[in-house]
Length: 258
Ligand code: CAA
Image 1 (cartoon, helix red, strand yellow):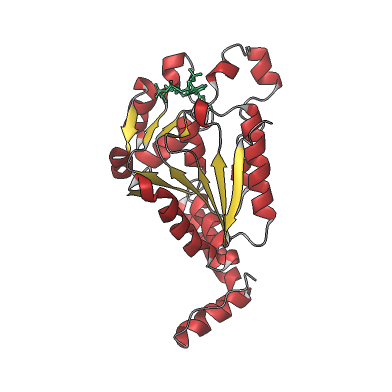
Image 2 (cartoon, protein in one colour):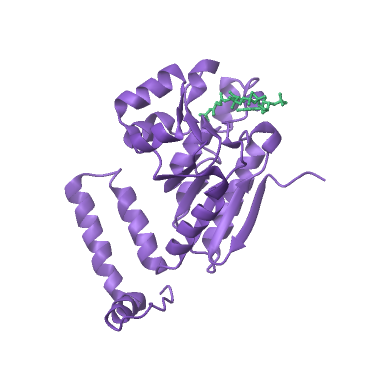
């Protein structure tokens, strides 16, 4: 029987998705990206999940798009099949937060997939890079666009043109990752962060994610206007009443996610 390409489980209100082609360092092929998209959408629909973790194996989050699958592809193939566009960006439809928990290699499409998540927690052995230039292509899943927004033009240009890797420390200094944790604590640290988020009121979590993402897509004035509207809208939720009442009564809020 074929192993599942994406393993899916729940811990409390946290959904955990693990890329599962360890022998190929989680090289991302079409079947895996289809499975990942379906698993993400299932968790998006599941009311019992408030935050999602995407992770890989101890050696690799993902070493990029599958080079053996890509090598014979022609221009006609990639255009007709909308290669990458067809199934790599399902993750962007997910309104719940997705945390990338990265150990080992996050290269090429692996780095791009991690950057499509909402933030990255890196193990101290993590390595990031966009090495596509070494095989005669360029990043194709947003690397040339998201990396400069994350780490500045100079460093992104360096990474994309030389294909070199960054270690976890450099990635944290540059702002690509939010925190570094010991490799043997990655799963627990990611779960702790996700559990905190999943315990917040889901409407405010979704609004917060959407507002921060808006900062990448618009002017400051428009972005602040957008934030203000979402901020005002949250006063219509039960959880706003409960959250503030609980604060005043010096107790934990009992959020109903409505
Ligand atoms: N595609 C297909 N197979 C891959 C792969 C990939 N991206 N990365 C690793 N593998 C396979 C290897 O071929 C090897 O398979 P075999 O055991 O059958 O030979 C297995 O995984 C283990 O890999 P290595 O033996 O190479 O392991 P290593 O520890 O010596 O090196 C590595 C690790 C530095 C990550 C190296 O595997 C590597 O450089 N991988 C390719 C990285 C890369 O170029 N990624 C970009 C792909 S293009 C892309 O992603 C396009 C895009 O933007 C969407």
